[in-house]
Length: 87
Image (cartoon, rainbow, N blue to C red):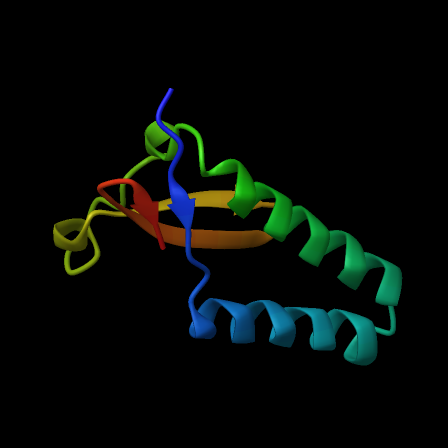
């Protein structure tokens, strides 16, 4: 099985941080914030094997870029597979 390298973009990190802050501080539920971010990072790490198992986006412009998506709790993770790299 081919292992893919994972690159988490700066924008993705910001989005995850913003979700964490909203849940932890605005909703005042820090445990849920930790649980969500842990689940997101674990799911992203799992993309190193078989990243094509999740569906491709069906409309342009993301379709033409090969963007795929997976749901993690109430959060959508968008990514593209480029050779042996996932970003």
